[in-house]
Image 1 (cartoon, rainbow, N blue to C red):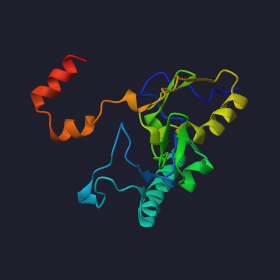
Image 2: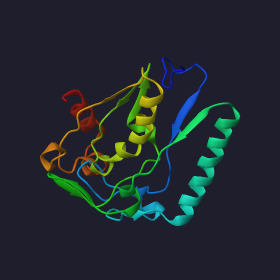
Image 3: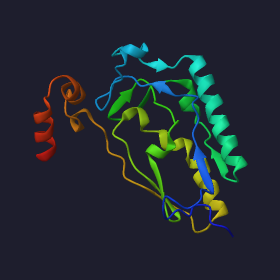
Amino acid sequence: MAKIVNSWNEWDPLKRVIVGKPEGTNIPAPEPAWWYDRPEGGYPLGSFGPFPQEMYEKANEQMEYFVKTMEKRGVIVDRIELHPSMLDRRPVSTPDWTQLNQHGVNNVRDVFLPVGNEIMEATTCRRSRWYEYLNLRPIFERYFEEDPEFLHTAAPKPRLTDESYVKNFYHDLFHVWTDEEKLKRVRNW
């Protein structure tokens, strides 16, 4: 039986890849770890919600081209199955917090890393990405069924309480601290 996950370096030929989907991707609502402030792109601080439909269509077109290119080269492409919560755009929560929307799963590589026969799942400091893993679990379940040597390890998720964050960190980082102050903070972590 062929191994489904078998990645030991970054230069061997690619045999299999998981590709995300642009549907359900949002401009995240402000949260302690992040806020989207791109007035030049039409998204000033505090704005959030779905991207315009034409952006999804263009992103889908590009991703489909990428998938077809990979498949033409003999690469097996697994596409994620979007969890319904990604598409309905309701707020998500835990007992500690509520987030007005989720980010999406366009970039599965941000949180998941293959090493050998194992996929390691990191956690994220962003509440809008807390439930991202739900979109990949069906793929991992299939991998377990098809390859008895496949491993999946998930890091413990932090609670992400308000007290977990340095208040106004991003604002201060981009608008207040000098380069010298930033270096001092890095060195005295």
